[in-house]
Amino acid sequence: MAEQPFLPILIGSDMNAYGMARAFYEAYGIKAIVVGRAHLTPTQNSNILHFKQVSNLKENFVEEMKKLAKEYEQKDLLLMGCGDDYVKLIIKNKPALEQYFTVPYIDESLMDRILLKENFYKMCEKYNFSYPKTDTCTYETYENFQVKVEYPIIIKASNSVAYWACEFPGKKKVFIAHDEAEKNAILKAIYSSSYKDHLIIQEFIPGDDSYMRVLNAYVATDGKVKLMCLGNPILEEHSPEGIGSYAAIITTYDKDLMDQVRYFLEDIGFTGIANFDMKYDYRDGKYKLFEINLRNGRSSYYVTAAGYNLMKYVADDRMLHLQQELTYADNEHLWSIIPNGVLFKYAQNTELKAKARKLIKEGKATNSLFYKEDMNFKRWCKLTLNSLNYYRKYKKYFNNKGLS
Image (tube, rainbow, N blue to C red; front, side, top):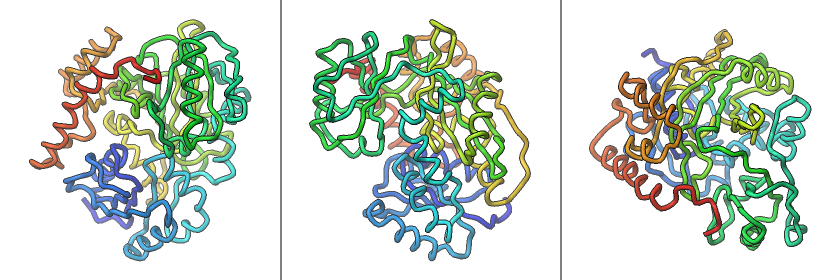
């Protein structure tokens, strides 16, 4: 491949970082610089990226970014975060960082309007999106908080960045409470930790993991959506830290939904990658939106695997200044990070399982971590052990979303 004038700088070293680095490598032959506080398994022993460990990355973020910019000053640098906390840091420091990097994210003023979930739901009202019946619990009110919807209910943090920084026994990304006693125990456990921000209390939308939908979109610098790709998860992760993260997705298509989201993104002046999580409610036939993320999701390599390289959309627009047309993805492809044995044992939608088997047989299935162009004995061993560990995790945690 031809030498490129730009270099991606990816902040984080998780599965999302590897998927992004792989997408850049596949599109341009570029080895991205991956920066993290610790070197996690997904990016270890890789030949398609360069890893830099910076232990005090969050504490001295701007200064560390300036050092990087000086080290690679011969290239145009594209700065992207792989997790909510890093993206928030980039956006908050965007004016300073733009002196050294291309920063493909919205400004802080728009972030503040949509980052907190209660603000996002106000925007849903304006743009006619459905969302679960929702209430807000605060540190000051939690001891006497009365639930206004029927059990079971969902309990989750409004401020995900602050929540991930806290610790308490039984911590999960998302909780389900089936009665008053369980609700009280969960609220007490959360607010006994360092987390003191609001909690979102929602009705539980019925249906297994296959009723979920995930949508990734790219909005170019001209303010127009260029790519939308909708995924139908077959199975989520069920470990405490993984609840709500997708383990297997089949790409799907819904023009009406894509049209609605496209109008919303263009109307609010969004640019960059947006990631939506929602669930189909069979009771009224509507998608119920949960949140918008200001970055590509952890599972977003499903877009690239289906034939629509998400990082290429970003770089072609931001770094190479190429014209792009609107694309609604419609290729069917299976993306998964779990062994097939786990997928077919725990997934509950028989129709989607049959479709997954068909796609595997046709060679239309991808695990973003197992990349044949980037495989050596050490990497294969670590990834295989990590993959086999899913058998233990699902046996222990499947459908356990309470405090215990």
